[in-house]
Picture 1: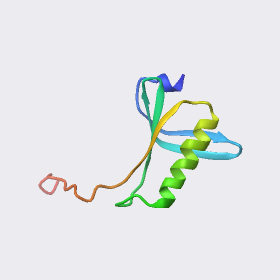
Picture 2 (picture 1 turned 60 degrees about the vertical axis):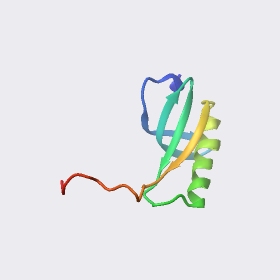
Picture 3 (picture 1 turned 90 degrees about the horizontal axis):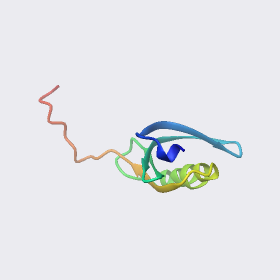
Picture 4 (picture 1 turned 45 degrees about the vertical axis):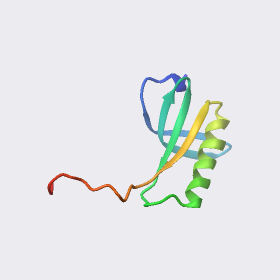
Length: 86
């Protein structure tokens, strides 16, 4: 079963009732899946939550896969790369 996969999955593709989605990240955790939608914005927007709900709560669950959590990941503006210009 996909929920028992040994590693993180990138851009897993699912379809339900004609709606095709790509889950940015799927992490198998104890027989279920955690999903993350990765966004390039500096904060989470309401439409991104709706997108995650459609993709996770509806499309992925239509496949019968156990989904335990959905998150929207965004850019942390407090991060500064300490790479000395590299």
